[in-house]
Image 1 (cartoon, rainbow, N blue to C red):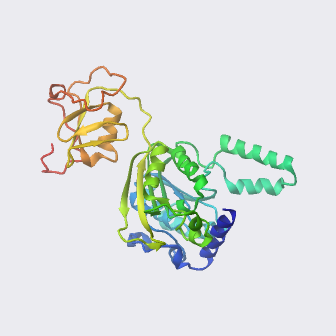
Image 2: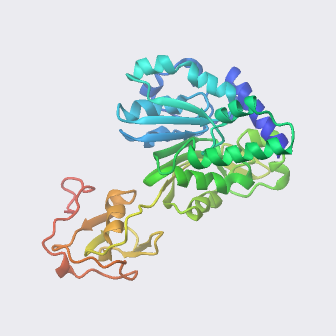
Length: 375
């Protein structure tokens, strides 16, 4: 795997100097956003999706594998004056390309709200540029020097992490997770979970495969650096985020046509969305939600069950998640007519809320279109 990592570094360093068409698949971006970008950044960008479309005003956005800075600068326009964008990349040439235009882009954006940091996306606590400064003053000549470096790294991760815990609203990435070794993919997703705020979102465009790539393809450095053989298998991608504790994990964009087919395995672009759960206590005040349909029933990641058209009992935390979060289009929220003393747990899955407890309450109509009849 070390030779594969070296090939990845070399290939993307070369991609910062000369355009490498085989490193990306066709993507449609917001043309208005593209117009403000330097042509060099556009030409030397390598991706498979457009995660910038999930950015909201005021967000603190973290772009994993930010490359030449294209998505970062697009996101910086979208977050507005109150937002912030951080790009993390490990390739010096890509970082140099992104930083080359920071002053120019600050002028266009009305302020410098983007920074680019050198680090491994599977280890967001360690700032590699700071480590390189340490190594310049403290070269490794023996085992004792190595032990001191490891102690320094531990303290950096603990006391001054590059990206702090619970500090980011949205994590985006564009065709980079597949470059991380299989042995480090779980750590990568765990780091994504760590730095997101409770309620924070994930929007990751990446190449996925319909079947697991065999070992001989994974050992092919060219296929790995080309975003092919290191791809998550499509269900494994979902499961990796569920296992890390995320909820509302789903595929949004999904290319019907594969980008490449290698030995019968289809590799295509997809965008995965996920949400980090809130830390609020589970307190039942008498809220209810109605699942709109069209399915007869659905189950969420907390093992609740919702029957179509029925008032289902939920705690306040779940109520907010279903009516204000990623499921908002699918549920009608009904607060209690009179907020009762809270019960510190959710009602058993499948519990209906008596209509008498919510009769007369104002429904949560935030997701109702005018004249839809849902209110």
